[in-house]
Amino acid sequence: SQQGEEDPQALSIQEGENATMNCSYKTSINNLQWYRQNSGRGLVHLILIRSNEREKHSGRLRVTLDTSKKSSSLLITASRAADTASYFCATDATDSWGKLQFGAGTQVVVTP
Amino acid sequence: DVKVTQSSRYLVKRTGEKVFLECVQDMDHENMFWYRQDPGLGLRLIYFSYDVKMKEKGDIPEGYSVSREKKERFSLILESASTNQTSMYLCASRLQGADEQYFGPGTRLTVT
View 1 (cartoon, rainbow over the protein chains, first blue to last red):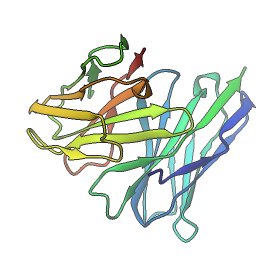
View 2: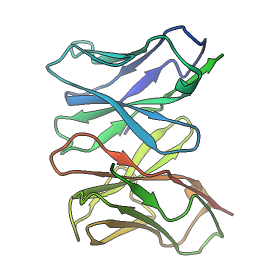
View 3: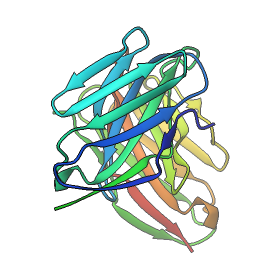
View 4: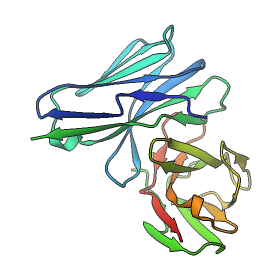
């Protein structure tokens, strides 16, 4: 089953702008992770936020988590052409024994 | 750096053939996973393995089997390939108790 659902499905911005994407999920979680996938490649882990955290930063990435709304957002500040990729949220549900459930992803295109 | 390699980037097989997809990781990770990725559906877990000779069904195991005879290698087997198994297959590994998964580059399988 698909736990996380990203919104929007696609996003087109210019270099220097911020990109925001959202993820909603359905069950209680231990943590929520964001991954990036460049075209036709494997996924790369970006950032993890635990259920008892509300906000986390890593470089130009900022992730928030609202467990009451079962939602998370990923903000990429000052986007670069190299940020062009698909972004996936993945939830580690409390009863999942460490298995991740991935959403369908947000495709981000950053134009120079 | 963790490295996860997959035996082929692209593979074309005929309906009814037996297909082997190989995944090797070099960081002594206990856990390994096989996903398939289809447009609009994100990643779906086929099988996973907590350790050598251990395997557990994921969300969509039908038509697939796996083998984990050595810690570093996790094989996905399509017993009799069908056209609806045309997809991108991604392997991942994870250290037992850790959160982050490390992905291989993927194998794009086409069944004709």
